[in-house]
Length: 108
Image (cartoon, rainbow, N blue to C red; front, top):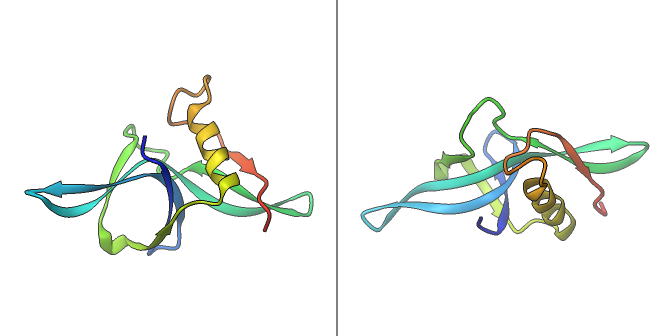
């Protein structure tokens, strides 16, 4: 898996996943996002936390092509979010693309 990247999509979704370029004839044509999870800030017992849930839970695939025009910006994730994401993906009982929602405490 590629190192996780956080993307802000043009529809407002914040998503984390493994990011790679898709090339055709040595020309980058779009991005590929593997094991994507949507990130949302939620309030839990009066504190703000980050909730992760499958970005596209209805699909059987775990990798999605994203047009460049759909990405507003991207960045390396906060270390706590990166750790929570990797733990979610590597959880032995979930075997890859988990369907459960997890919440990570991040200093906000």
